[in-house]
Image (cartoon, rainbow, N blue to C red; front, top):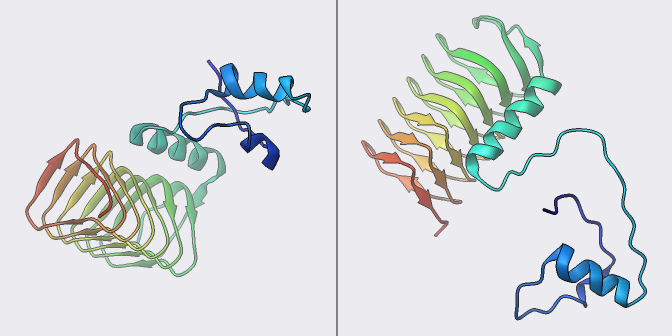
Length: 191
């Protein structure tokens, strides 16, 4: 198994053929050595997490928030944490927040909405009565009234209409899910 972060000089990319699979440990590293190029390694402290699956991305995001977030006390909301909160957060009455949370800049959360263990990036709107749990929601997503998003990743610019149930799913950029839809384990590529 080979995992890590690679920093490559541009000439290394010339060693990788475009027309076939080329593995780092079996092909690239031996090609670097055969050309007499330098190959260095460095041990880095910390946790390594593969985020190749949506559930892994959510888990890694929550771990970062547990480490880097802090307790928050916002007017009208019970203390919650750990969390990282950006500028311009707008909360309506009756909102329930439970960390770990990432609430980016200009996030708006409507009356009676619930957000628990989630990342809401810049410009996300959670309309009244909606719930977002254990999910990562990227920039400029709108989650419609009374919708429920659980264990999912929503890419930039998605539109979730009212009363949608989305569980264990990943949506590509700009995806719209129509009102009253129920998706479980869906994977929708961008248009």
